[in-house]
Image (cartoon, rainbow, N blue to C red; front, top):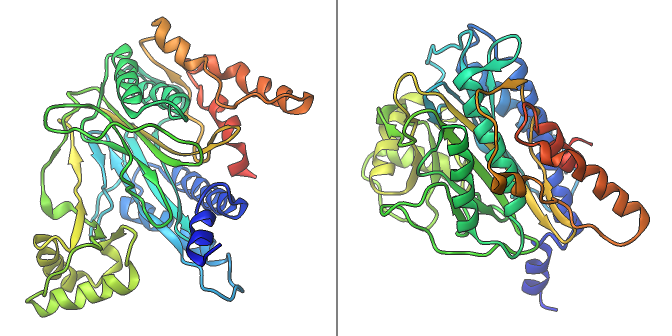
Length: 397
């Protein structure tokens, strides 16, 4: 076997080492999410929460693989974002920003971690309040969660991406909510956070993707975003964009000195993964980033909004399509929800009753499969995440 063939084989989930790295990244990002949620209180500064999430991931990954001969890249795979109420995504402000959380805010937290380029991402929605979440806030979170539960059962070998797109829209409609347009669930590969195989949230004439079939040993970041509004987000202010990713296939000779300085800094510190402009020298960054984006050397992640008064919920998880079924690696239990709607549609109930694990012959494994299957049909209820969490419990070990 050539070195190339050996390398290719090792990048697959057939390698126990690769699975271990995914699980380690997932364990860290789950704990980082737990930390940030615990700090989501009235008057907490959003930028401080973002920094805490990123710092925790850097610290935890920094403690791993210290004494190996070959240097292993590890750290933040996607900067911590805190997007509130009608803000859809990518809000990770600069240090000078004074935005704070308030009682009753619906907070969407998303972040990513990687070990040797093997990425685990997560997003969760939390309302800053005591007691159960009710009304339309509960509806939109329940819609995202139930759609995530359905997607977990449909992102499996032999199924197609369009099956998932159609199903999650049906789930959102059951809660009188919309799936937000323009959201993509990407296949993850080593050092690739936005693989070419994708699931589209909503198909439209403006946005189409190639039909694709899920295969064993693939990894996906399944991203579900729901809204009580129209589900057609817009960018309001380009200056709010702080997250970028190096476009590795683009080249251009930058004219401004500030741009060259910043781009050199980015190429050294963040050659592949998305990063936040907070990590750069702020004054120089503002000038330099504009030219880099204008010439497509950087891909921006804009802050998107629904209309004021709309509520937006998001749940994203990383799933490994293993030979014995799907392993959901990233998650956090939901608050108690009391939605105004319940799922009555038989097709949605049938999707929710599908097993996540493939039952194997033999006593021990079969019992374990049954135990995990029992609560899965309850996924439309107030707190179905506990049932889902049992399937990804390895990430919490």
